[in-house]
Every structure is written in structure tokens, then in C-alpha cells.
Image 1 (cartoon, rainbow, N blue to C red):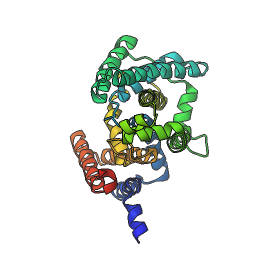
Image 2 (tube, rainbow, N blue to C red):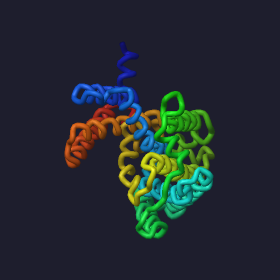
Image 3 (tube, rainbow, N blue to C red):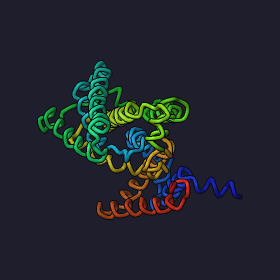
Length: 318
């Protein structure tokens, strides 16, 4: 019994149960909401947020009030650069993806260097970068986004060619497994948790705190761009604000998944489940034809309730 109680207190389990409960409620209120096809579609949409949340998880785990408020605009910029380079041609997928990831890496590098060298707080640094990237988007597009996703990318995201599932889901699963292994089984992962727990203790132990911190922000921008590329495969066309609204949900997914905002505690599995919870909740509220203000209020209440529950756990208070 004690073991069962402990399992039910795990934030990942709590978030997973909430996702199942929301699907069940949706199935009762709207026939077809809990159908296999609908669930697969929700998971497809959740994958975009889930991929972006990989980088956000890494940044939050790094501690030092780590947070990346630029992921939404970086995702949009990555989608724009990739789609404009592809221009609907499969032969240009690789150059388009590499260009997007290269620019994203430079943005992440700028974030990291600003934080470790100029000692700018992460909140302020990434908020400023949000504005900078927003300006870059206008420079690149001239205020008009006209890129098109390559057919192969569209098929990967929208098709069901692999075991009857969208390819993007399998990409998300592979990324999730790799990231989890990196966090739990590699030197980089151990160092990340170490600086998240105590930067001073990590530094005294010989951990290159600055290098690990900069790497965390570079990875955050890379995964943001990757999420943006997946989104443009879904929409097939790019928009100037394609992924801008995913910044706060990416943070919420990390928190819902049980990662400690102060850093050093948590992992990506929880963030992935958190992305699913937010996507299912949004889909349910949309299906119920709730006005936008009501959806925002409900999402906020759910997030506050989860934080209240997690805050009562000694593991997350420590």
C-alpha cells in the first residue's frame, strides 16, 4: 500500500492520470473524442509542444533560475527559414533543416553567453532575445511569410506510414528516449543535474558550470527550431506567429511533469506527459466550444491546482 501511495504521488503518474481522465470526460461529453483516431491526432499535435519542451526541460534542470522565453519565436524563425529554403522541394529538406538549426544554435549560444559572461538573469536575457528574434523574423520575411513545407516533411507529420502512426510520433518517441538516456546515463546529464542542485558545489567539484549552462541554452534553441519545423510540416505553410504561443505552454509542460523550477530535480518523461495533458485539455475545451477567455482561465486554474498538489510534496519543496 505504501508503495502504491508513493507511485500515486509521483508527478508523472499524476499528470498521466489527468490526461486519461480528460480523455474519458471528453468521450462522455462528445462522442468520438476518445476514439483512436482522435487520440492519435491529439498526440500528433502534442508532439510539437513536446519537442520544444525538451529544450525547456534541459534549461530548467540547469538551475540558476533557468528559463527560456525565446523558444516560441525561435521555433517560428526555424520554421520560416526551413520552409523558405525547402520551397516545397524534397531535395532541399536537408539544407533547410540545417540552416534552421544552425541559426537556432547561434541564438542559443547568444543566450548562454549573455547569461554566463554578462551575468544577465535568464528571464531578462531570453525575454530580450524574444524581441530580437521577432525583429529578425520581420527582416527575413519582410512582413510576409511565403515558405512551403516539402512533401516528404508533410507526409512525415500528417501521414500514417509507420505502423499506422504519424512518423512525427515515432520521431518524438526516439528523441524522448535519447534525451532521457543522455540526462540519466551521460557525463553531461550528471553535470546538468549537479549545477541545477548547487552551482557552487558543482564548481568546487570541477564541473565546467559555464560550459554546461551555455550548452543547455544552445540545446533549448535547437529543439525549439526542430519543433517549429515539425509544425510547418503540419500546417504545410508558415505564418509569422506560427509557434509564438508555445512559449508559456512549454514551461507549463515542464512544471506539470514535476520538474523543479529551481533546477536539479525532474526529467523529460514528465514534460512529455505534461505536453499531452495541455494538448488534451486544449482539445477538450475547444470541442466544448468554450470562448477563448474561458479556455485560458480553465488552463490557468488546472496549472495552479497541479502546482498546489506538487508543492505539498517534500521532494519538490526541498
